[in-house]
Length: 495
Image (cartoon, rainbow, N blue to C red):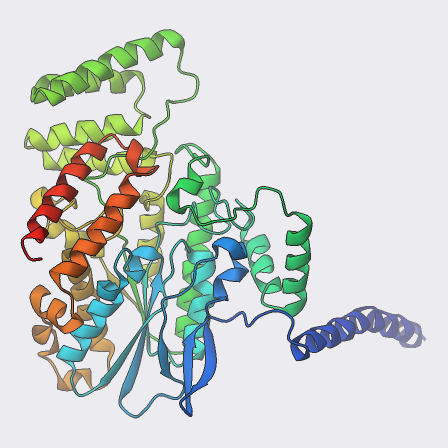
């Protein structure tokens, strides 16, 4: 009797669940048939000159950005089916991984040149699967697409955009500060034609609101300041760790090796973009702080380093939350021959910067934690750059700005990644000297067809960027201008 009484309820429940699913499924199919919406994946299958290939999807970014400002992948075209002896390596991350401001000589292209030279017996395909302004919320679905489209190795260089990228606590895209469940539900919904149709309808209703109409670069985030004490940062770090862990599981589940790198930032030659005093600082304390700070700055500019440090210490005793104070103290400590103390102050300046365009210690800690798992090869790109830098602190010698690498920086990181990838390639034990065949910087540039004129064009791009916020407001903006002008004058010799 109990079973007979239960059966109608089960049928009713099935009807309640199944009927809506059937209706939605039918609607989804109908929308696809009539061509509503767009393909959501990172890869698009095409026929080019009777060859079946995979190319970049220029609409992929529509799932994460408003269409007017959506970023797109770098163009690529690879065979849908890998040939015998082909190895497909996918590089994932944000604009620093992509190679901005010169993708033609970025990390992926350096890695390609290095692997091809070291293993000429293999057909190496390095797919630049990185994009400007994206973070781990976007990289996770890209990783899944890469694995499902024949990736043999995943290389992840990621972490600078976790706050300002889609769904980040300081983002102007998606749902700022969304929890992981909300962000993933949103991303999944936009992978369906129904979700895309609904998103378009909502966008049409909201037209005339705050949605951006043109890409403004980093300037768009000037209103999104997050002090180090903001509890939303812990959510960002937690989301990043969980997304990375899901990338690791995606790779492991498909038997694809994962190379995970620390993300390098310009510590020594990049002043903070924004500083903020600690909450509750009284007017009298603020006045005392300002007097000590300004005196310290005057002594620093006069080359009176020890006196500058004393004044900065006085200011720090009142309020040590001002990011520029830590940066200036770091420079003085470096000049005083105390590099270890300087490094700590420079790192604190990054952590205190309220305009969060650089990976802070919470991001770096999450990278190290996930990299410690079985089956992950960790590359310490930050350490590799530090080792090649004066006083062991990364600076303008290898960066074009706060995180984007110049050709020398791309070569250093590319080499570190290549050394990690080579043992993962087929028949690696038959080529024990492969790492010794990695080409040097000049050989890589020659192979990539990079000329002084290309570098000059890149620097002109950077000069244009540095004339705008937030670069123009940095305390060391004049120093950057002098370095840019000097390098452009030097390159003029080659024209």
